[in-house]
Image (cartoon, rainbow, N blue to C red):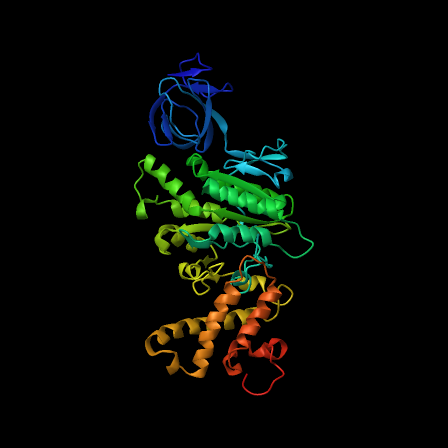
Length: 475
């Protein structure tokens, strides 16, 4: 039975809010309500429990007069006979304001840092507004992360979406915190970071809090924090809330915004949990068949708009189950995004930090953000030469295991030393940030250990940048 303000028996949508007591079924985070009228997909819902407490939810599906609602705070304790359901006639929204910078929020955007209430400047739909393809500006300009393996070899470009593929136990969170501390754009432009943490532990939350507060980075960060023991369904809203704030800061307040989302694997697990509760036909590995579409609605919210100064750049982080890069989550993410940064378990075991494996890494938009006037004129050539030399050194390591180093030529032994030095100096920089100038200089110092005849990709810049350019003979 549905009651009009708890008195009328016919469930009609009118100017007066309608409360329903027609819950028929509860499963997982979902509630099924019968005899509804005028209910819309994605509409927000208020639930009042028999003890007077309140919960919130969202309409997932409407079929005839039946509505399926996902409850953010969980369904434990819901009484199918006494729980009252009210449809709020609006979609999920978040209050936005420049005062959000420096604040810590829960997964749905409510302050949890004990600070003063935020006075909203606007209240925005968290699904965002798609950027008209005609209005999109090509991603360009360099974002300096301070990480040599990213800045020098797989440059992050303003407006790009570049994911980090990690594995269980690898220091993805430490890398994310280092990027948040160090990231910057060219001088004279305002820069902000929106960090959406999904399903993190209390220990990880404490780590991020300590990192941000001790370095002063929190002043330019909006921190969305969904903990592992928070409602699973709330995890589905966290990236959308974070991106809505990022779009507001970028396109209304002209800031250059970097969005870090960690961990997208936890988001996809929440998506699978809700799909299972809805008894949908599963796709690969049990994940819903629409996961590709769902992920694209998140990743495609990066970009620039013609006529606007601000930009939204995404750096999503995901854990590859069993280090499997063909798993559906990294696989689909790789299709949608513009490259990937891959962390190596082998380098991590050797104590290299950050353990970025350059060979499977890629930044498809790198050429748009580097070069003279942006980084340096030799940037592309140096990256190509470092990649080629390191790949040859890695291949020679396999040969050494068979024939021994004594059977190698002098040039081969130089490549072997180059590979070791590359991992120690370029990749394994520790937790100290570097400028792009320092990264390129170290690259030239490493290349100086190779015969000059081998440096075919940087031949046009040898006289200008090679440490031994003035010497004669084979260097």
